[in-house]
Length: 224
Image (tube, rainbow, N blue to C red; front, side):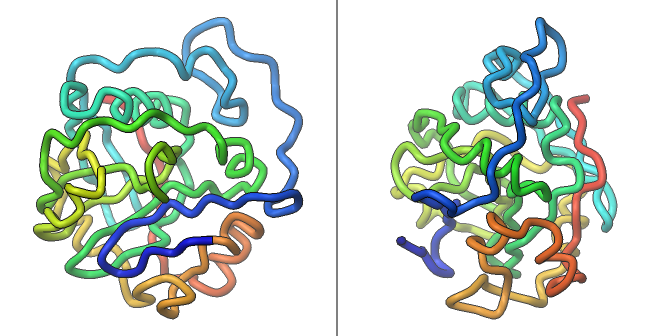
């Protein structure tokens, strides 16, 4: 299993039986409207995002707003749009916050939900922008592996551009709130003393609340 350290951003992918908790039985797909994040097969997740839209994130540190431009990264924008409107990110923690580098989130508190989304990958988007301060991008474990994890750049991380990290939006309100997200735990295990992504997959919120209680979380994310 590959782990990319400080200079890059990884969305850890677990493989093999028993790696995660067994997903809960999927509810029936909705006929329309807001999709159910418990069921990644819900046809509502195939809805195309508007050409541009804003998503407001209310957090334990305050609110920030991401302006998304679909032309920057269409697959990423569509996935983000549908995850936000489904309520997927509500209650999710910023589990990897490295001052001067980035703030990462997107692993669900419920391990069954995380397991259900593990293989729901989206195609890569060409990198049309650059990972500068405030830009918002999907994390990845390599080509064709984007699922639900997002990071917000704290500084000029243009070194990530050549590795396929395609920004799809930008924090336009509340970057000072993003700056205040708790980053005292630093890099994740095994490189640092922060949360181990494998254990988040397996134990979810119980693990984070027990061992990393200072991590900030999203209380509500909505499309404006």
